[in-house]
Amino acid sequence: MLQHLGGSYQTPSPWPDYTIYSFPDASQINQSHRQPVMDAMNGIIAINWKAAEPHWTVVSSPFESKYSLILVYDREALVAFSVYRMLDVGGCRAIYRSGTEVLPAHQGRGLYGFFTSEVLKRSGAAEKGEASVLYGWRTRNPIVWAANAKICDKVAPSLLSETQDASLQAACVEMCASLYPGKALELPGMIMRGAYGHIKHQRQSYHGTASLVEGAMLRLIPDSADALFSVGYARV
Image 1 (spheres, rainbow, N blue to C red):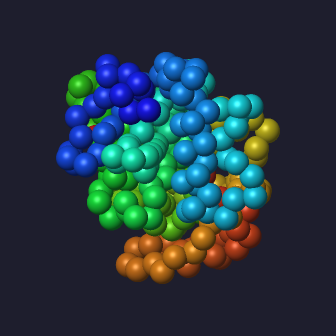
Image 2: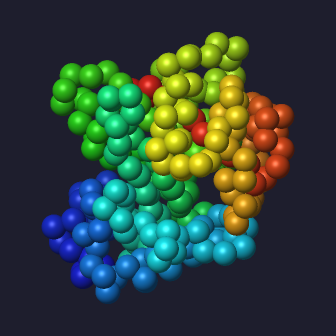
């Protein structure tokens, strides 16, 4: 499949053993390739989560034009992917990470950080001389939350601080309403109830900041189906 995904969408890879494709408009992926790509994406999710049903489907497709998609292949198969969206929040350019997964055997090689760097480049903030961009994500994985919060000057909810930023709280509410109509957020914790009813996070051993984040999450969202919706000012 690699040679048929589209050479014009292949992007330079920092790793000699990975081939990377970046689709700013995910609808540009050829129709004949969509089901195999989606099956591979769902396969990675099923390994990283306890999945009761596929996360991506024809009805809830990652190949709509509103999504951007980065795919990473080794010599045999898809090993990681990142789905994200560019949107307007409060008149400002914003990024939302719709989902990023890396197979366990390929974790620890910097793929999540690579995805983040590529997504931030797409915002165009650096070219405009801006120091940061609104950056949102939804998760109940302490490692993911800590990794995203680390690149932000401020975050809502502020899990490890008593300080809450009213403008970021408002951005959370607006972004969530735009992305998930009808899904209310519980303030000030930015809790989205039932976000992961069909998949269950598999707990890992957490250390450092991730361990502190896990403690905060267990207090806020002990139910594995719930998630935190977060927005920060990501440095670019």
